[in-house]
Amino acid sequence: MQLHITTSDGVPIYLQIVNQIKYLVASGRLATGDELPPIRAMAEQLVVNPNTVARAYRELELAGVVEKRRTAGTYISSGGSPLARGEQERILTERIDALLTDAQQMSFSTDEVIHMIHDRADNLKTATDPSKEKR
Amino acid sequence: MTPIVDIQNVTRSFGSKKALDNVTLTQEKGTVVGLVGENGSGKTTLIKHVLGLLKPDAGTVNVFGMNPVTDPVPVLAQIGYLSEEDILPAWMKIHELQRYMQGFYPTWDQEYADQLVQEFGLDRTAKLLTLSKGQRARAGLMAALAYKPALLLLDEPSSGLDPIVRRDILGAIVRTIADEGRTVLFSSHLLGEVDRVADRVAMIKNGKIVFCENLDDLKETHLELTLVFANSRPVPPRFDRAIAAEGSGKEWSIVFKGTTDEAIAAAQAIDATIAEHRWASLDEIFVAYSRPTGGSE
Image (tube, rainbow over all chains, first blue to last red; front, side):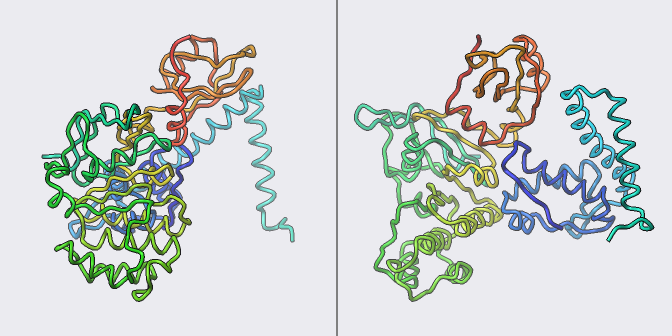
């Protein structure tokens, strides 16, 4: 599992860890029962304060993404899938919001944007259709 | 619980210059405090008070509940100190340095010292004098860590060092704090490093503490706004909670203290629209407080 910490924007590091792990669960790269590295190992790997990793794990536990087991490990919880769906929606919503803000700045109407999305979707379908593959 | 470091209303002048002006700073056990400020702001003077190397003109300094000026032995025995200046005896070889330190510190852990020597790729038989700046810093770090001090005090530890050595130093801070109950106070002007390892950030400017806050809280209460005005304006917009403004014409970047809702209301009040908003980075917050243009119009 590779996480990437940046200090160039204002997102607190614990939140970067939380969001990236949620993203990994939502995208299926972390599955139910997968174990997260111990706090100390994660802190040393990312070169961040162990207290920050501990806070991220606590938040993930509160959100039901991970669970602590008696044997002192932290695992992706089994209730992951409905949450993953919500998380997937959250990720897309964020991107849609950014898109709509840009569109508004450039005076595109929502209908025009939707029209463009359909166009791009058709385009993408053609591009990924193996029967029409280039090369 | 007694704080590890307890600095209360400390003032210290050098001649007519106030190096520290009524500084209060406390640090709990097991936390990392990052001390930031421009050169000459008072960071090193503050750290020297913790070491008992300087005596306050007014106010009190307690470390582990003791006065480091009148009670230096038990205080210094528990502090690991590394500064950007070379303070180690340059004529010593690494293994001689280890024996020398062992003599001073009963808690010296030779096994750990050897482990650090190996990790840092130090040659035990090399004289400190012949080492590169980076290797000397690693030797200093080894010497400061191997007696497992309860308080690690680092004064600009990564100043002028390459990224690999800086990573070793940060790694050492991370491991120190991962060991139950140990405390780190460090100064740095590399805010990215402070951002990674500090629990709390204290900013000092002209000898005064500007803020001393939990790092996550600090970021979550400061926004970086891009404001757009209908007409070009010759001077930066000034309004409540705007710490600093930068820009020209119709577009201005503002570092704002408050919530998004408060920012929207503040922008409306001066007929501006918010084109972009996000949390401010530690860098942006630092620059804003260094050169504030805040206040009301």
